[in-house]
Amino acid sequence: MIQRSTFPKVLLLLAAFVFFSANTVYMLDARGGDLLPDINKRCQFDFDKVQQGPYLNLKSALLVNYDNGEVIYAKNADMRRPIASITKLVTAMVLLDKNVDMKATAVIAGEDARRSSRSRLRVGYELTLEDLLVAALMNSDNRAARALAKAVSGSIEAFAAEMNRKVKSLGLKNTYFVEPTGLDSRNVSTAHEVAKILHYAYRYPKIASITASRKQRVKVQNRQNTYLQMANTNLLVVSRYDVLTGKTGFIRAADYCLASLVENDSGQRLTAVVLGVPGDKLRFRMMRKLLDWGSRQLSIQPTS
Image (tube, rainbow, N blue to C red; front, side, top):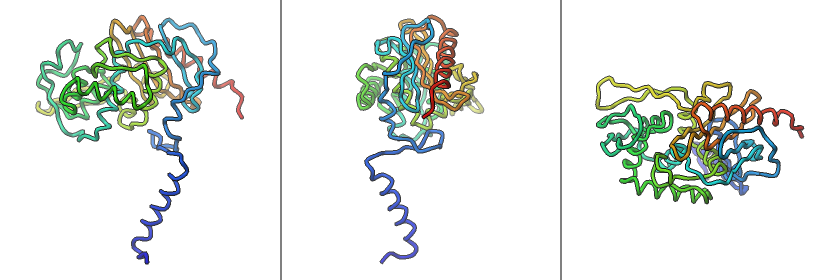
């Protein structure tokens, strides 16, 4: 006989069983909103309704209606290219999959700083893994990405192997990594698969929260009262679009890259990827042009 004190728990278990028993898995929206179908279904893109879009000065691009997976615009969507620091979205996913203590700390080593481009993280600085993740995603800090990889996997090589296992498990056949920063041109993907990476990354509330912020402050643990302000390299966060997640990237072999999942003024969510843009500010102009055009296409579609 069930005791009265345990009855609510039994009801909760029964409700959970009914909820998950219909061969469909549901996940909470990263913003804490509605229940959404299994994310794998959001990554089965429909290319049947691709339209002739605006001229864009870039190598490859993709625009997807996030809510139904319909591709609105595509240019060389399956061309394999270096993706630079967009790599760090996968770095973040692999880190968070490990369920490590994000309050644990790691120190920026000399080898982390080698050929790392500009950074506010000096050799010897000690930060929590959470603050290193903020620096890696928001400020695209390469030293932070290397420190994270070594802290949780022991070496860059071991962490890269985990990255490749991760993308393979997601069904991404044209994405490959040799390290966690994106500085190596052998880190490659396609606009098609980068869009999928964005969809998967959005399911991690911590990634969504960091990449949607304009600024965040991190603390240097071994320097008294030392804080560093990290500003988002994705300038779309100061545009009329509500950025839900995204990442910038640049190395010479990749040119300028940008991937963003945004919500427009009408509440429609669009996933946009632009790769191989020959200019820093130009990539943001190209993306806004693509998003503006895409929003107009959605606004004129007949409602069912």
